[in-house]
Image 1 (cartoon, rainbow, N blue to C red):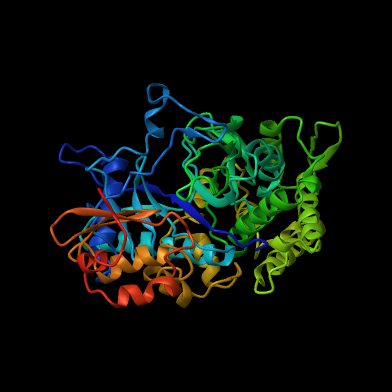
Image 2: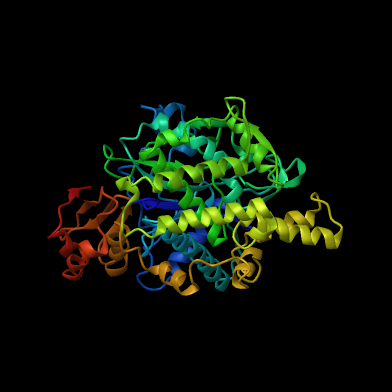
Length: 517
């Protein structure tokens, strides 16, 4: 086990275009996002995606259920929280790699398939970049211009999310989970931030900071994701057997283009979760006096020297906090506890080793971590330009370069260029990423979902899907739901023989337990 658990990344993409509607007005982001999703479904290889109108199965969505033990009244919820309402005008597609590509709050969103480790999460996160770029290319062939950015802020006050999901045992009390996790989530941008030009939600002050999201955090714990954003989100929507699992929905992280940064973001957080599950006492004693203020203070200091107060009066830097969590993970890993002692797990040692290596480099000379830590790489690039051009942090060319860093066009995106040039270390090869665009991970239910799309598709009777179900058409034209409550069910090893025996969804249903829709 160690750092290995079911996890995934959802990324809302920034979108711009010069398109005008028939009245000469700019085309709205909602319309543009629909173009992107439909463009990918239309231009993808045969069997690679369901048509964008195929639908999503919302039966098990519970966006208003709170992990603290109650459910928000729908009348009190912001409209943006009602993600369980089917809207036939919203484009959504399920992909053969098991991902969902759809329109969410006026952004195209790629939600990766479930994977069981941080390296696979990196691979499917990069695959999402190729999916989005494929959509842009298809639209360009149709004469429609769209640009997509894998970032989280527009520099003018808007923020959009990159959400991580981790499966956690329901037996872990949520209040313990939240309390022990907050200090690490506050400090994690030191090793996992994407970097941002501008200080304040609308970039009111010139400067550079580590995190894209720090200035948008307003609460320690809460249910919302688009307003009053909390450090720990309480949405209790497990997409899995509810009495066994909870899904930790992390909304404070950045969309990242550097492989090592993405790897450490998920690997380190998964390790900290395992410490909370197995050795919570190792993380006691680090509560912050003012977590929201600390998140901003640490993010605003690229020198990594600022300290933030703990509840007991001590002061710690971001590096100190991150290192304290690493030491707790190292002690837990050496404890002999069965959750850390899987002989088939090589990834835990790799994550902890990388984490230690990057942390030591940041302490010695942050500039030497530019190949691994995204905010360092961006800061270094912008500093070189500032020095050459004599530009301040408030120079519009610096702001433009910040946006261009995240452009998914390989010919324009600065991060993509550095990655291609080997200046951002790769952990996954282009060939592995290309395969992940169409092939699902083999060890989770995403394999069944993705293979159903590839083998049968809409014409063969796949009507919709969700994280824990696939809706198929039976031989009488009725809709039936195949449930997959356990995320590690439906793997290739478990169901490849089953799918090999059937050439249509209706035939498959003859052998599967299902329920009426």
